[in-house]
Image 1 (cartoon, helix red, strand yellow):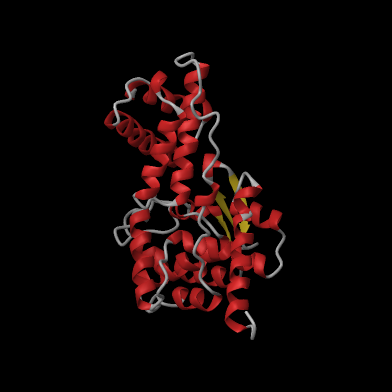
Image 2 (cartoon, one colour):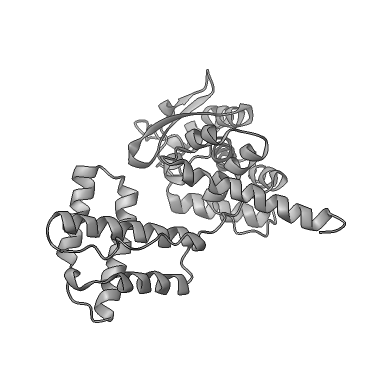
Amino acid sequence: MQELIQQFLDYLSVERGLAPNTIQAYTRDLKEFAAFLKEHGVVGVDKVTHKDVTEFMWSRKNKGIAANSISRGLVAIRIFFRFLLREQKIKQDPTSVLDSPKLWKCIPDVLGVAEVEKLITEPDTRDPLGIRDRAMLELLYATGARVSELINLNINDLNMDVGFVKCFGKGNKERIVPLGRKAQAALKVYIEKSRPGLIGKHLSNNGLFLSRLGKKMTRQMLWKLIKKYTRQARIKKEVTPHTLRHSFATHLLERGADLRVVQELLGHANISTTQIYTHVDKERLKMIHRKYHPRP
């Protein structure tokens, strides 16, 4: 089965042109699925049934794996079996009768506007790294950028004169997103006062956000910084880099932004992905109603 998985991954990379991050995620999902099948005595892809796939999904849910990760895993398995069917490795697709686990889909955590303000203003802007961190947080919230998009930004992806940033999303799709005045101001300070000291001898490095060693920031670095500033701001919620993306979308919709515009800003290929944020808005309204209405 491992050989077939590798053939499938090569197909995704070469023929479908999927993003490396997506292929890495699918690799993890399929290897975990293969291990599950082996553990349960299922030998050979032609022996897999829809029951095996369903039980694998439930096993992941029982381990506490996030609903979005479970859904992504099902997508990976579905595409894998369609590939096998097309290549005549199997005669029947066991996933053809399965529904997506919609009931498991969690409403994403979001921060209130005041909480976002506390988080963003937490870095010490008297320090070069604090100036960098403030600019990163401002940019995440101003644009709704994904973590991978932020850390891969180059200095020439910014157009400070007109206030736009060029983001490269999933599948290397390009989109142009407005920066906003506060993000622009924070970026200007960072580029003029902090970045020259960080880049040091690495003059050929075009990366926008640099570590203290003059190299591009990594996902892990950004994750740790956000955890640090969340603690300092005494925010009790579970905050990740993606929380600012969720908050960006939710706050826009709360203030009347059109769903299609938010879809474009987020770089979602399908509007159904963006629609989850309308549920966030409704849930918050219900919570406020229960809290403040005299007869909830």
